[in-house]
Length: 350
Image (spheres, one colour):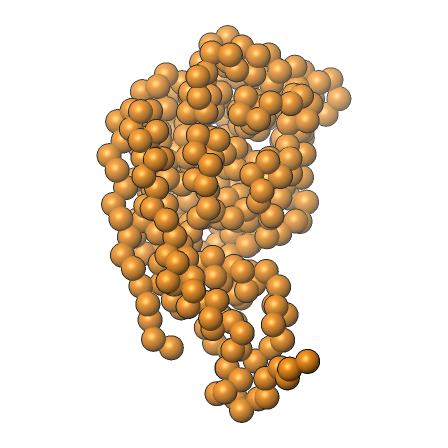
């Protein structure tokens, strides 16, 4: 099968929120020629039309955003960002903030669930902690981050994306960050705090009610003060969320398809979509988590998750599991014989 490939672009230099806004107005489109190659090959393969369901759509999506045909899944990468949140002081988590650094050490030692999943599915792994000794501000009292702090984390995330990745799985670790995700999605899309707030690390009862009240207070405090979604990210996000947002933007320019993990990663990416519809066309939801807000958010984004396994771990775990599906899609699209090659009779006319 002859190879067709178009080159990636270098991401723009980002020094301010205005630079991000400008970049969102010049997003590169997907590669229509590569997608057309995939679409043209699919009906020639030895199977009834459409019989591989979403695998067929996913192989075409990979071609479009990798900028080549056939697609490749030899170099998938999982990137996890970790950050600490000042809102933890409000008692919104079942675990103390110290757990963020402890889990980063566990990732580095290879002892977390994500390490096992990456090993099983042949996915490269990186963990980056962002100023864990400096939690973001408590956003029930003021902005979580200044514009400069948010942009610094955004640019850091951009720098983790390189040419040659076949797909990028984005995840996070940060005690308190489901509270941040809920407040951010409420600010972006409206609605009731109870619809966006879930148990996170396992809070229930009165503690869940308190967490919901914190989300409502934060969204009310900052919703009227944030002129656009990027300001909402600064005021209600965290450094790991801003880094994910930056990685998503850089991946668009470098022709790297993205698998978003759970609620927090999707909330971070949603700030781009809210600022510029179509900004997440190169992204797919690896799974839908057990956090109720995640399913609602995916509906807002018109994303159908690849997997639904009742998970809520984070760490890019659901995204990495979805890599197995992408590998299956790629193998079938690229390796199957055509009707002509296999001397198999095609579909007859009706």
